[in-house]
Image 1 (cartoon, rainbow, N blue to C red):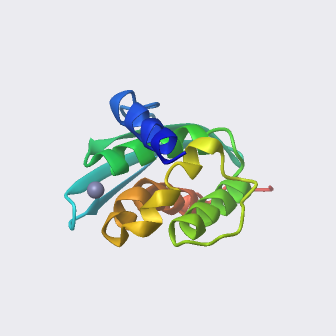
Image 2: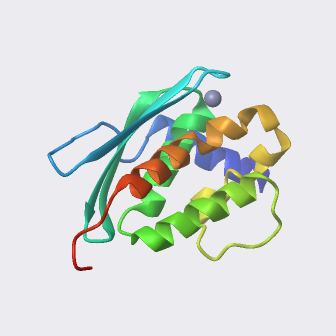
Amino acid sequence: MKDLYRQIIMDHYKYPKNKGLNPNKESIIVHLNNPSCGDEISVQINLKSDIITDIRHSGTGCSICCASASVMSSTLKNLDKKTSIETIRDFYGMIRGDQKISELLNYESLAFKGVTNFPARIKCATLAWKAIEKGINSHKGEKNG
Ligand code: ZN
């Protein structure tokens, strides 16, 4: 099982999904870095009403950080703001060692469960998720709804 999880992380590291920014005037872009590891990430989101219609990421970092950004982008794309924030919270909970089984976390997100045992890597695994959380929270939403 652990090897399978490691394989998911390595696949996303080597073949990241939604990599490369493609901003337009609707985009929200958040930059974050993790000095303890040297990870740097930019996350671009586009929202239409309350739906995240696009997520792109770019940056450099360790395999955990880059793979996590790829998994985050494919997990949260097309979710509404409320569900995405709940999913992000559940991801943080899992990384902290919460034993609750989250129905929101997909198989690829669960691959990061083992990071719980490596406290130094927790910031790596959550950096992209923190960036998008910040971006979602900065989105004011549309008037009248
Ligand atoms: Zn890192």
